[in-house]
Length: 111
Length: 112
Image 1 (cartoon, rainbow over the protein chains, first blue to last red):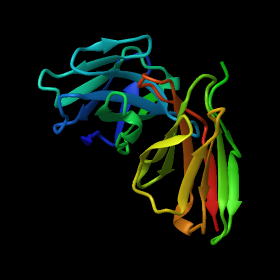
Image 2 (cartoon, rainbow over the protein chains, first blue to last red):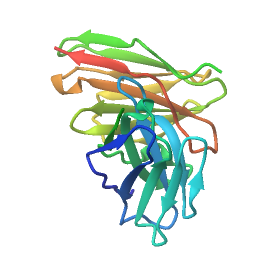
Image 3 (cartoon, one colour):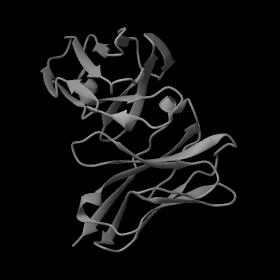
């Protein structure tokens, strides 16, 4: 499974967009990019995933570069409740139970 | 639907003892995965069970084992506990054919 690189921490002002980058330069053709977040003392929560096209749902947008070597998770209007550790992970669809999880990005949303 | 539940939420054991953790998946989910989370290592995959069979396994010693019952509930067991086994143990369930995993709140194990 490919590995990912994320900045250890980021800050964002409440109400502004939070853009969280992720590098996955060794991603293979059949591997998806998944994003989860973990709020303190809770289990991780699924956010979004994609293969090559940009994706959007009620929580966030996922922008994947054309070469698929990097992606950005966008929280359009960050709130204090979005303060969490965000994990970018890659793996094959249907077998994501062996995804390699890194240490993620700790996002602090400030009032 | 009720979410993934894990029991107990907190546990304190001493070295050499064994421990059993329990996970009840979301109703209808047949896949259950277990992860160990420590501050320095992040989430590490332990194993996955589907229909009572272990489908995938991570790189953990044989002291870590698990099983799944016919109602999809799962247990994991750690024998001969070591100080380094202190961690948050997370269980996640998913539906057949879907990629999204739903995590429980975890069991915080402390080994003294």
